[in-house]
Image (cartoon, rainbow, N blue to C red; front, side):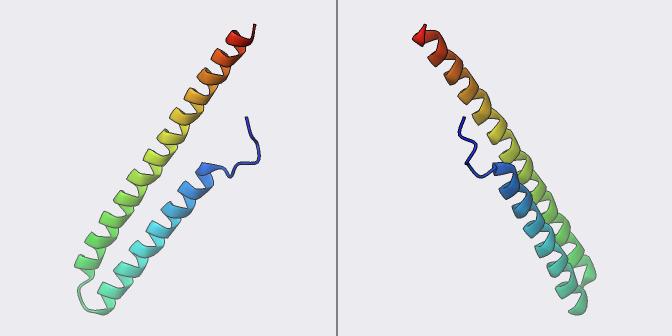
Length: 80
């Protein structure tokens, strides 16, 4: 395996952090505008969507690693 690749989990964590930051910003904006309930609802929606995307990216990475391992094992069997 190529160790020089950027770990995907780092990108997944960064996008989750950006989602949380956006949710906090949306809540603050709507709270200052006088509708904190709307801000809280939007914030929760953004956080849930960000977490869903985070879990999907981690699952995609696990699946890719599994297929890479299977392909490497098959390649080793074929070389024998």
